[in-house]
Length: 267
Image (cartoon, rainbow, N blue to C red; front, side, top):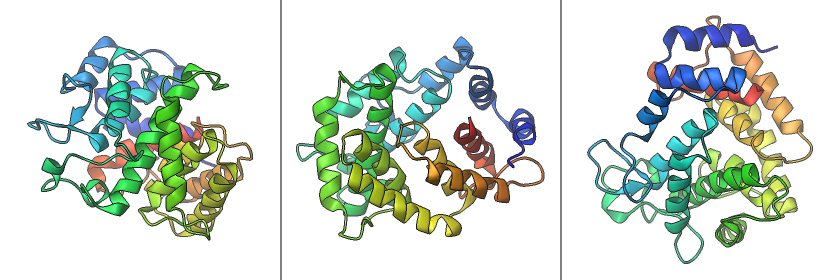
């Protein structure tokens, strides 16, 4: 069993104000204090997205999706700041249904966001499509209406075209769980199930950070049978540290963030 109390204690002891606000919302559902919203919104550009760095002049798909995840953690995904970002994200979709970072960001982009790279394109398309899906489902759980219907249909259709016959995908591991949610919500049920099966096969070798991220994403969209989510939670229980936290793949500075992600997966 995951020690929820120990994980909460770890975030309280080591988290910054935004991280503690995220924890408070996860625990109680209470809105974040205004100063936390101000802190997250800081740096949001006129277009609606966030730059890849503090001095950046162009909004970034990857950075904006990261901020949307923070807003989701405090229940503000569809508040004014989030809606501006979501509309910018939808408008940044390319004609073929994909998302790519602006070519001017090539020198500073990490591998998963490298402009023009096929693996990065599939990853960013899956992540952007996933967050637009989460926001749309939050607006209308039955999806009788969606402000981004055509955007999501186009993204899902392109993502399906990239899957291999065995259900694997030519991109990063995290592409899988974001694509699973996008595809399922766009009624590509078979393709989503194939992706989930591959993720289940890879689960024993995943890092705690990847397991937490996958489980947190899976619970944001209704995928029906939750066998993969249950398996992920068991793996999180086995990898929780004695201090209540989990190891991040990016080093100790990000351990609080991944611990919050694990708590979101167990909410």
